[in-house]
Image (cartoon, rainbow, N blue to C red; front, side, top):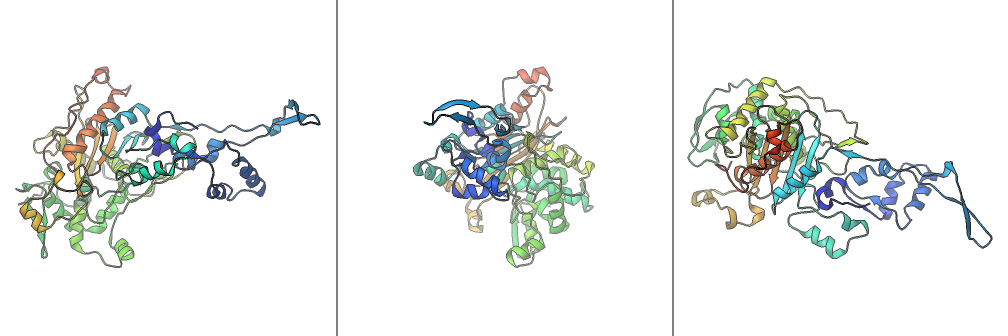
Length: 483
């Protein structure tokens, strides 16, 4: 097959290649001896290919159809005289698959990332359909169809930006402060008053350790709404410790974390939702209360995927409705029921929505410059996140935390942003991860804003004046703070 959009859908579609001995063993497993013999003959044909990754591999039999034969009449010299029509020998064409992805939105999202590496997922909040499923940089699947050279493959494999890796589906990242809505929801369920104030003087002491807030001067006295929009770490250290690891883990799963979502393609990871049982099994140690503080700001053992982060944002915007993501609109969609989960309280979700709106549209919000979609009306609501990939020592804090060109790229923080839009009538949810992009507000939020603006402009349901607006807002880095 050919891939006219090349890199745009490399990780989603995957690619085909000549069948190896391992492929033949897989393809002929659990079939009758007659069918195994037929498939072995079929895949020895020099022009035959089989799916190696993505939807190409997962839906191989659906796309391939059934082989057939031609019945020919020949003379004694073997020369073909005529072809004898025979319906019982006719091949069965493969069936089509229709995806939910908007090809132009996918292209726009990839272009918006520029030279950055990372992932973006856009969901339709009403249906759960995946409208963009971006992992960048990518590879050209056409290079694999007739066999890629060792040199070219090794260049892809050794690239430090991992073009072969499907970051949106297989990548796992600490969610950082984007996780704070989960912790806040757990606090509301535990009976913590959202109007109760916690005083942030830039650090939190527990036992003989100190946990720092991202804001050097602290936030002062903050309630839940202010803590979300200002991303106050001290507030979330405090309520996470009071709520406890088990309840945070339970609420996390109800938002879709820890779940491998079967999309009908290869890959997919569930990340890690840690609790005492997980730690005893994985590390042979009990859970320590101090570890819950890191959990409260989306760090520590917790890991999530960009797909899960977009789903969290969609469930908040849908007032707790248990949305299930899917990418195959027509074809062999996996028949996987949504895992049993207690519903999320709509009133609690409204508080999360108010907090996310504060992030982008109220004074003190960590992404207040990214709320305007540049369409002459609609705004987005979102949450910034910056996930550490290295431990910062006390000595470095005293002398000044190193950033940017002062440290190697692979040691810089990941930048994250989750959002939905329009804020007053949610249609789309998004997550963006910019690997080693450092600031959620300065790097990831503008990317998400421009992708959501494109999604709305392409929506036939949107007012005509929004669709005609050419601007996608200011590009580049903007925003205040670095939570």
